[in-house]
Length: 82
Image 1 (cartoon, one colour):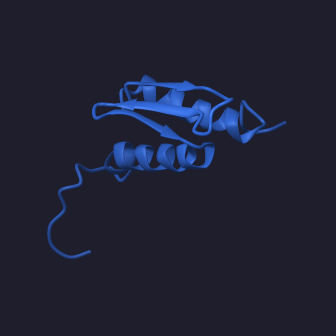
Image 2 (cartoon, one colour):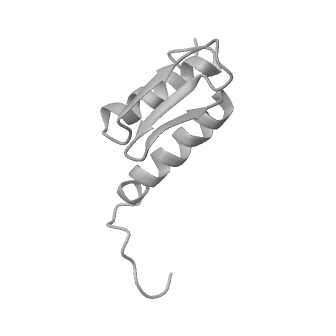
């Protein structure tokens, strides 16, 4: 049994975007499979068309950017040494 609900990359990217949408990180997304840039992610600056590969990297970066400080257990305002 797969750890992913979807067994294909496109399905996993859709799940990642759905999670970002539910957390308020993105405003919306659409997938238009027949287009050159099928993933259309809506952010405050507008609609960003992406390939599946670009959308996967976007989702990873957005999740790290949004949840990174929380995952480290702080507010991200460290000062001083390591």
